[in-house]
Image 1 (cartoon, rainbow, N blue to C red):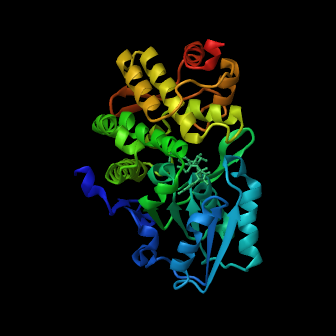
Image 2 (cartoon, rainbow, N blue to C red):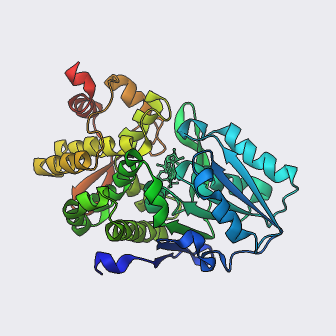
Length: 370
Ligand code: NAD
Ligand code: GLY
């Protein structure tokens, strides 16, 4: 399929009775068909934040009003630092204050923070109500809105409280990316890049040929990147919904990245920035373990930097880095498990000697320059 053909497409995610469609295209927010055929209910609740609501809330409300007698809203503070119990409670408070019943449909209008929290609220409210993902960042369109991982953060660890809970549908309107700050676009590109080394060597080649177009928000290039990312994610999640094995490959770069996010305080580094830098570190570990040639690290460094992402971690002592990584959900009995690349398009999970890991941290952190 050529990139141009990718506009206005549907990617199906096959999970038996939890299967759903990911709709990708420009202008979907304002298309009546996007909102037809969803579960019927007395109430809908749109969850958004102070940045996204002024841009898109009224348009979504207008689309939902013909379907739901009561369209409620809750507008949360913006930022990773608010992906917490307090915001989750605000969603639940709004539902209970309006006597929302167990058929109520939740709509997550925003980026991954809103999507993850809304999904978690949907998972726990009255033991589970339906929800729809309306992702408005590149990162959420290519990754977080798909696959049913929902969560909030704990001060001691990223995404430590959550549930696997699938949405009814994903509506990824590419036109919403027009208002996304450039730094956030770059953050989204980190999760796009990851799909190449873990699953599709040809996609990595394509990214190198199209990175400038993506950064310039060329609609056809973005459409293809979102579609291919969702196809790969749907393929992985379809085989391993609850991360018993394969799904962990989607966390390439995340073990180092989560340590950066938690260590620096949520929001200091964007999730995608931490993942970008984390992929460089995980690539280096793959090289040091003899899995990949040194040219792979150079290639990843170049692509991550080209996407506008940091390739040097913040000044954090290797011991602290390692301590934070031991809280990672992939760790087993305190042993850190890394997603590494063993050939282009193929990832593997394994542990590594801590002195080797410390060498990687030193080689790619600002500490080395201090
Ligand atoms: P985000 O939700 O914080 O959004 C980034 C910023 O962009 C915010 O300030 C937001 O208000 C703003 N924004 C959103 N849409 C906009 C638009 N169209 N125009 C202008 N501004 C807009 O961050 P994110 O990068 O979307 O998501 C990161 C989160 O996703 C992290 O918490 C991460 O842990 C989570 N995540 C989850 C999964 C998963 O599988 N569930 C996967 C990857 C990441
Ligand atoms: N973003 C990792 C996953 O969905 O499994």
